[in-house]
Length: 454
Ligand SMILES: Cc1cc2nc3c(=O)[nH]c(=O)nc-3n(C[C@H](O)[C@H](O)[C@H](O)COP(=O)(O)OP(=O)(O)OC[C@H]3O[C@@H](n4cnc5c(N)ncnc54)[C@H](O)[C@@H]3O)c2cc1C
Image (cartoon, rainbow, N blue to C red; front, side, top):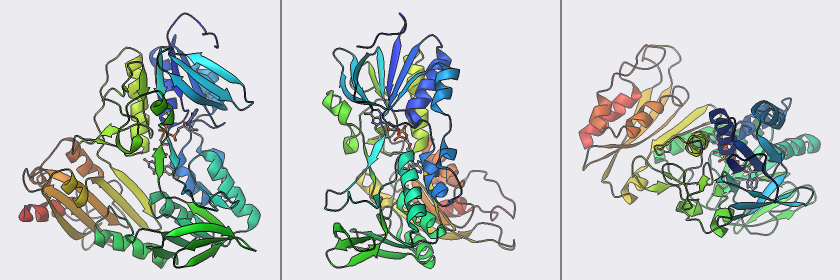
């Protein structure tokens, strides 16, 4: 067992990225006398994973540009005992000990007073032949990003296959096309973006195809094989050839340590936490992509792994372990991404999700403009809005357009947090000037149209 530094409280954190380092920094700021020890299995801490596709799109950029704060700065400036290359292997809640192994293979045990599991999520890799071949990648860690970038540069890649069509797959598709790499995208499900309204999804699909990407949906993948020049993705009814394969079919929470320690799990085997981020053990917190959250619309537990929640939950854990009582509100599932020249955004529930949650959903889809009608450069914005016929509540919004979409989603996101009705949203005083919106903002037009159907 490694000795403690002093007599005071020791806060141990597993995972050194968004949630873990937010918690570590804030705990030290709140209580400089507290011993804060972070173990991170890789050599990277505190980086923007979200920036990786854009970095890959620019060969001249260094992947290390995405590091927000280096490990030595956390150690020297904040006094955090940061152990990179240390993988936590087991948690013993009875003894309050974490067993960990460093990259030299040495085992160490750390006792804790409070523990945070902030181990994030891992890419889902199908258990099929060939997914471990050289040239097959997933994108999660900074090292994954470096490997992909190096492979593209060293091998003069001209064709790639992406398995999956989620937001990371689409961002990577744009990054590869920017690198002048021809892209085929393939997946087993027959629907392009399953959670999205069909009109909006068709707009995204057209944008991707207009950029010369081949989309193959509804093809069950059997295996990947090596060919003379590269790789072949073999489906039941067709084959695709390329020099590299990117697997982007989603992520799964890293909850194994928690499960083995007997902690309760939530949706999709994420670690169940309350509003203070406390797990079913009174000394163990969890935050970020490995933990669940409450959905502000349904009130139910949900698992939506995104960056803001990870950072915010990390802060809340730090406040709670340093003596404040902080409860955080849930998530609305607000998300945005860019693919080529389109912005895609959502908040709240889709029609299907609303039905499953017991609402009586009504939906409207409107086509509006990004700027005033007569203002040059205005482009189409499609808005889909969902309300509940029984209560009049706003349930969700999706939007696609070339400009003015990404930040426009924040107004309905706030409305969801405040549990507003569609009528209340339609009465809000939203900003107008010709370069930014029509007089009736697209959100207001959607709310006005939806009201007529409710
Ligand atoms: C390509 C890409 C693009 C993204 N784009 C967006 C975006 O645009 N918007 C958005 O909101 N989110 C985005 N995300 C998601 C966002 O990056 C995550 O939500 C966020 O990083 C979660 O932070 P975290 O600290 O919970 O987990 P992670 O960032 O996964 O960090 C967990 C850390 O724990 C370490 N770890 C795991 N197990 C152990 C162990 N046993 N011992 C020691 N260390 C361990 C891991 O090595 C890792 O460093 C993107 C993610 C990717 C991969």
